[in-house]
Amino acid sequence: MTLALQVSPSARRPCGCGNLGAADPAFATPPVDPLTTEEADDLTAMREEEKVARDVYLRLFDRWGLRPFGNISGSEQSHMDMLLVLLNRYDLPDPVRHLDIGAFQSPAMQKLHDNLLARGLQSESEAICVGLFIEELDIADLQRATQRTSKPDIQMVFARLEKGSRNHLRAFHRWMRGLGAHYVPAHLSPTAFDTIAHSSHEPCG
Image (tube, rainbow, N blue to C red; front, side, top):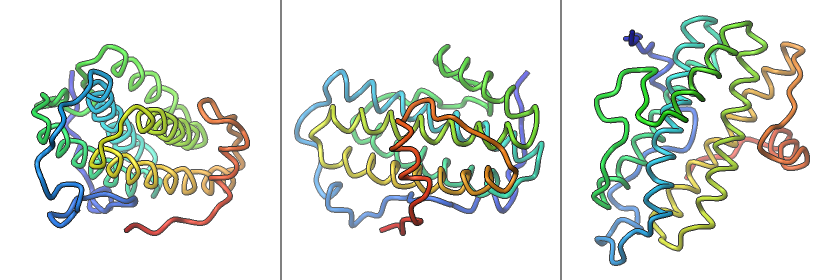
């Protein structure tokens, strides 16, 4: 059974660094070089990964009503939109086209979503820890994907997504401390995680 959740006004308000403008220099001209297999795989995977984040956050906002889930789910939609621009630019199929909330084409992404949602529904503290897990996973995956491409348009989008994820991680970390919860990084080194978590919000632009 699929879910048809209503997105609240707060969930539609971006909380990251999303959206592409027509004036972005990296998009001023059509792409010259075709994608490598790795680049195509990375764009497809990141589109699904951002949907995992959006869908989990929508469900956790519906369950707990915690502000970061409402705000950041809107930002994740913006991240999905930016990746769709790249998929269309390079004539790649959209792996989440017409899929409902909580539904995924990739079995791995479906399992990731289901496991994280189950954990986040246990308690408010676990929900916030799920947010931290998702954001550090996004950061780590974006860093690896960035190293596998030399295309300015892809690098620009990945940089914006990573900045947004760093801001999201900071927001969840503040809530974690407020709830008295504890989280052990799973994808970033403890030093890298703490450096992001304790640094200032990064303005978009």
